[in-house]
Length: 377
Image (cartoon, helix red, strand yellow):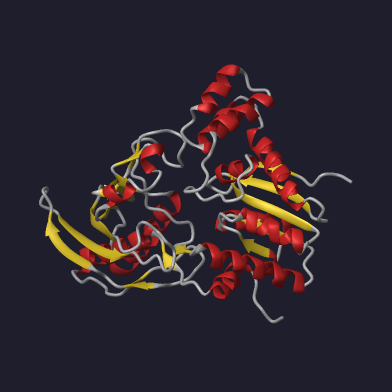
């Protein structure tokens, strides 16, 4: 066939243009601002390193050198987010970063500027009170600051304030208010790259991915919700790139196509919250079309041995992550129960087709929190 599989192959076959995450844009803006703070010159374009080693360059849309209220200098740079062909609410938003000197030895301290939210509820991957700048973007920003510090003789002790123009207004179109992220958007991204999910184009790319895997003689494929779960599937099963299907939110597309074009073994790997939707019977895992059902999770927890107090706490948990943390502390295997229910949903779609299914649920850091192995003969 001569086609390339995996995420890269699917993107090429879809004909869709990828974009950049808010985390990548914030990193580029921070790097430009810090270099300007140290040298007086804004680099334009500015090049950053993404988690997988790519080195994209970003044009600057805003530059400002100013004196702060404390009399210290601060530099601000801005990058316009290009989400490619993804229908992202933040496409075209101006992401700014203002950098100033911090306390010696403090490293990088993050602040939420206008349009970036603050965490006010438990259950998210950041403590309450922290700016909603997720762990991977934080590390990208730290790495960029360290790179500039090494090149320009800086200490690397800086305060980084990220802001997004009109972010508070844009956040009303997201789940942030419900999750307790108040005041604006989250700075997100695990790879720095936005993979576009136009429904028809991406579903077609999933089908081509299955075709490539079958043509290569693969007997085991993995449908993954994103790059983190893809890494876990590779680590657990040692799968090659052409056996990896980037299903995104389209679990149903993977299952329905494999029913007609079977491969002997399928691993479904994804975040706990997304796979809890599959467990509840949803085949489209997008937040606009299905939500985490805390009542359903409470019922699973109860069936797994949770008492009524724990079940009630799960029913009002802020996020799926909080629900699983509550159950883990009580010794209730909610992750395994969700994985088993997700497998049952998958097998219900695949009924009559010779495909064995296992499920891996992970948390945001990529740790496995639930497993369901294939059913025995």
